[in-house]
Amino acid sequence: MSTIDQQPTAKRTLKERAQTSAKKFTTREGWLGEFDFAHLCMPQMPYHFGKGPQTPRKPPPFYALDADLPILLAIVAGFQHALAMLGGLITPPIIFANALSLDAATQSYMISASLIASGFLSMIQMSRFKLPFGYYLGTGLITVVGTSFATLSSAFAVFNAYYADGKCSTVTDAAGIVTRSACPDAFGALLGTSMLCSLLEMGMAFIPPAKLRKIFPPIVTGVVVFLIGASLIGESGLLAWGGSSNDCHLRPETGFFALCPNINAPNAAKWGSPQFIGLGFLSFMTIVLTEIFGSPFLRNASIIVGLVVGMIVAGPTGYVDGSRLAASPAITFLWTTTFKLSIYGPAILPMFAVYISLAMEAIGDITASSEASRVEVEGPLFDSRIQGGVLADGLAGLLSGLGTVSPMSIFAQNNGVITLTRCANRKAGYVCACFLVFFGVLGKIAGVFLSIPPPVLGGVTTFLFASVATSGVRVLSYIKWTRRDRFILAASLAFGLGNLLVPDFATHLFDDVPSTNSGLRGFLSSITIVLSTPYLIAGVVGVLLNSLLPYEVDERVNIFTEDPDVESGAADISKNQQGSIEDSGDEKEHESKGHESGASATTTAIREVV
Image 1 (cartoon, helix red, strand yellow):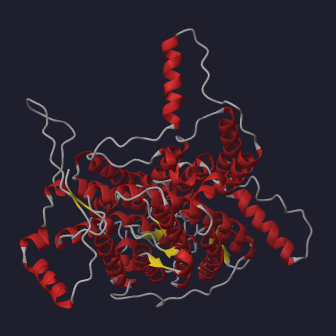
Image 2 (cartoon, rainbow, N blue to C red; image 1 turned 180 degrees about the horizontal axis):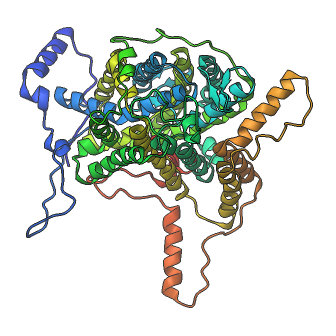
Image 3 (spheres, helix red, strand yellow; image 1 turned 30 degrees about the vertical axis):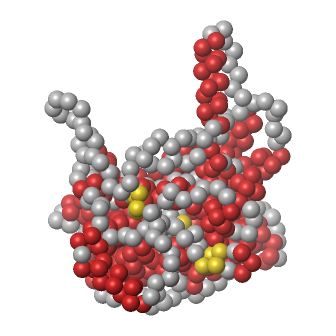
């Protein structure tokens, strides 16, 4: 299969550049090249009817990292990347805003700011700047940046602590129902604390990747990713599907949240009402049907398709709140709304754990991007991409906080877009970043997203969070399942799943500890947050046991059987689990290889199929 290689890097005169640009913009070859756009836009039926085998469609050529890219392909591929990111970019701001009862105007700004910051920070990550002493900033690949889901669970713990300590006010009605008042200061504390903790990831960028993978192997990162997804399903996804994730899910008899989303919302009803379940199920099934019948282009934007179809039904039936669209400005930008930055001491330890997790994800995502882009996945150049990518990932956490946006990190699902469009050229990535900035500047686009009824959003995000959990299971498939591995996994899940099923298990651990020292209280609060967050406590247990438990001399699969064929087959399975996965041809996606042990096995972690 043909590949469009990168162009010569010889320095050209200004006249030659002008002639090349004129030819590109005025010729069919410059606009279309050799790309077969039917490969992206034509659906393929899941079943073949008729006589004879189905003839596979010949894929278009692959455009390498610095190839001469046709203009239309750059636009189409960039737009595809942007669509693949939208669902993941708008979800965390909506969840944060709902958790803090922020007004519609602030919610709209948070979505716009997320889109704008993602565009600019993605440009930094893709550019690859050379630094002194042989270091780099950025990967030089299409590694886009977006809001991190790994922050959500820790953020919920911080928000709950703010309300519990009285730093954020609540209102209790006559029936004893407690309603949270708007608290933008809690979000400012999250931003300030994450900015401080982002320095840890920037420091980790200068540690050799092999050492990081040894400390954080797949048995640790897989459990962490799995529990992040599982937690989000229960804390946000299914609650929104049933009506809303606010206090209406408690089904109080009176008060502002007696109905979902609230008593003033159009067509409000009790949480779990059949009309809410039906709307969410419609969005969920739209994603499934798009995967079955949709074109490659639509399948990679299935989250947006699910939201669109849900809105098409929710609008005429009266479930869309138009006031949120009206409250959104026509044009906006960063810093039109600001938050009071502060550092919340008890959240420092949990946020350190978050940034360690983000660094591990970045290593895996960069490895996957390198494979999808058909560049080196080992050697000095690859190591420099890892170093530059992790450094830029940590810098994104710092700069996103300055831009009033929650921590951002590398998105993994765009690696699938590279394989789908057969375009690894960074020009497509820059076009994607421009689309994101454009979407963010148009404030009404954020207003449209805010108008989505919670059940429609819940049906989509439940699938999204389940995909996160599935990615964690996939990471765990890289372990050898020795007795040692099973022991570490069991101990980690004992705390992680236990905390997930009984959230208050460690909440009151230090209630009876008398202390007037604010520093000690803050330290105990940070311990409580770690113990109360499923993926954090599971990750801590996994790292400790992985460091302490000795390895057995030989822990391969032992099957006691008299059948030599069975025993031979088991040995083959054991070998296959340890080997790398071979590339099966130009038609297939590049899978993660054996050298992706440890964190680099998280190639499809936090945001794989947004």
